[in-house]
Image (cartoon, rainbow, N blue to C red):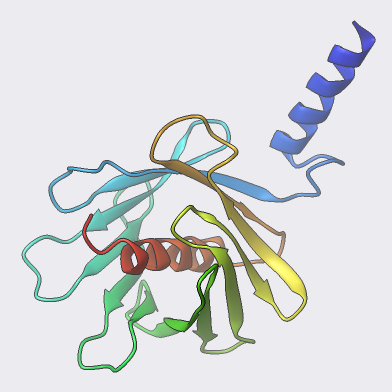
Length: 185
């Protein structure tokens, strides 16, 4: 019985950002596959809806807006046309570019992506993008991890973000990669 209690306590600490979780933030993405305009909610690890991704319908290029629960725009990503490589631009609520997500290299096993951050170091994205099993890193330091293994729910995946990161930017990086890696959805 003691073992089970210890495991439960460690799980709760991780959820609450305690000693085992190290203050990391956890989100769950559940995409509705057939929603008009590709809208879906991002929930925290307590099941609360914290951001909505609003896919703007009837636009020439792919545009996705990250909104808080009250509907206020937090960030936006837009597909960039007329580029040789696939890329999506991340903008803040004021329309200022904060980053550009680009497909960098394709190998038989793994894909590699680069996120050019406007006022900061670039981020590398490596892993199995199609299966939602990858890391986002700054040099050797991991800033976030994306994994489908954490959930048994179909079409759901988790994002664990290290402390000190801009959660909205990291979430939009994951959304942009998902959009570019799965264009038929």
